Image 1 (cartoon, helix red, strand yellow):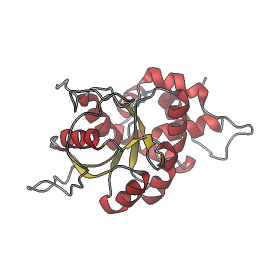
Image 2 (tube, helix red, strand yellow):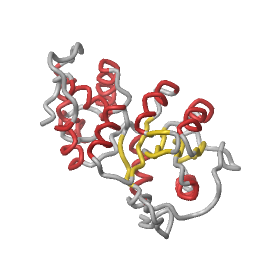
Image 3 (cartoon, helix red, strand yellow):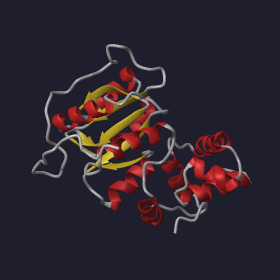
Image 4 (cartoon, helix red, strand yellow):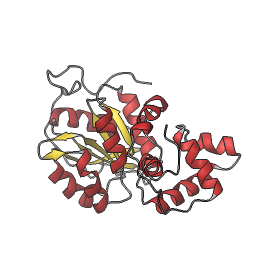
Length: 248
């Protein structure tokens, strides 16, 4: 595995990996054409050199295809429809607003997209807001490139891009409401919900319950539909809010 980062230098501000070259580009594929199995990725970050370097690194992977880059929420909204991404890497600080606050708008344009927040902060407030808005996870700008690539692949598969320790820290900070919600869950769905709250992946849940990964995915999809969620993390945030799972 490679351990290098997209850029070798560090910027003086709060974006430690902002350091490379090239203006914003919009890619529609490689000269040989994308593989049918390619994960379509949209990169939104106002530090153009960082974004271009990250996009170049992602594009070098045979199963990943960068379909667009943007530097603002306005560009992100335009590209969501035209580029049809599977995964969006979204900076939480953008010139025309808060990236986290734009997640709902972006999902309104393309509900199936998995939005992963690029962040230079570990603020629980920001991460909880992203989780409740429907983000599929978080990637710190200080993480290794290999971790970013694996995070993109995980998000595309419907997994949460967050480590168990961080998830455990965030769950008690999620908003709650009295009275509970209206969703009626089956016993199996509640079982899976409890395991999701422990940070287990689909494969881990399948092994623990002695069922197939495909069956787990179906249950997670049903949970998402019942709760109106766009990601596993949003499933958990809604479940905690409505008292369907203990987040303490």
